[in-house]
Image 1 (cartoon, protein in one colour):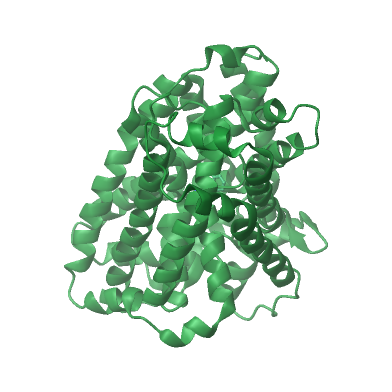
Image 2: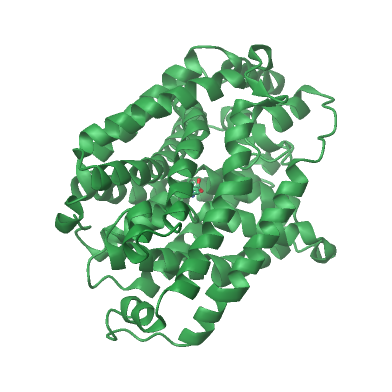
Length: 477
Ligand code: TRP
């Protein structure tokens, strides 16, 4: 309870931005965004997505930044400090549980990226038939021990970084890894678009299909993607903003994070689709694209092992800076509110999360039947967080900051006591009070209605993989 008085801060403005970008850029960007964009009309989806990022994502992120830096507390503490003794702290607890549940399946997928990095190092990823890549991937994720082993390694890596603290752990990791991620991304993009026949992939991603504009589901999936990709709605950005310095430019940081996150998503598309098209492979393979289709692409290129290694290293980095931020949400809560040492708090989180990870990894194999009402544990964690907890948390954050906070206090915090300008501040408040909560409410209803309607029966191995085995949010069928 006392520790927030000696709250650590990020060492520099750039460090703060990179840490937040590290959280935002994750498996969601490198895999999900290009696929969603490709499926939903390319350029049209891109425009709607950009609109969602600007009109919903940035306002909610600013609200989280306000809560974090104003109170200098974790996701629960922020609400508890502003409205002590009211049920609003519940909004913070939603976030804590949400972080736990996301970690439960995110670590599993993160572990898969380590396995593939390892395989690319050993050269065993090269020279298989396309079917073999898919079959080997399914065999791997369904095996009992290996995926769990890699997930545990990933947890230990995350825990290691977190234990070093905010400045020497989280910030340093982001400062080292994010530039490397950008570098790898640029190199892989250049490699991809200079392949023969690559232009078809660029067209696939950017060719506008105006007919998609009539599909309401597209607007909603763009909004959902924006929330997930920007790490919003569960206290992650509250926690990180609690480490911002007094002079951190709030609006500038929110815009930079949103812009960089979006840039990485678009670059991921440019990195993946031209290469896939160049080798005449199917870009709509969905969930297995990254783990089965891409290794096939790499194995057909000169220096394929090198490209595969670079790509999976990029995925590991993207996932790691995101798991750090998710882990930190719970670690910071325990550390602040119960005055537990940071490394001990991190250990408690890792120890608990292992249980979720083991169950969700085992549940990927239908034979293990770790399921409730026929839905695997993995999918339950995924659905519960993305369909219910995250939108709910985001809506509560908007309502809280919009209605419960004195607008003068809000404006003072977001302008560093008037030293930065905030044009259209009243429009912003209107967004927080009405536009964002209503829009988020729509996502919530749409997602819940969609998820609980019965799925079509699986037909092929690929359908099984995309509808049952993989997380719906990262890898929608
Ligand atoms: N944004 C990350 C991604 O795109 C995942 C993530 C990290 C996240 N922290 C979060 C999602 C907090 C929701 C909430 O992969």
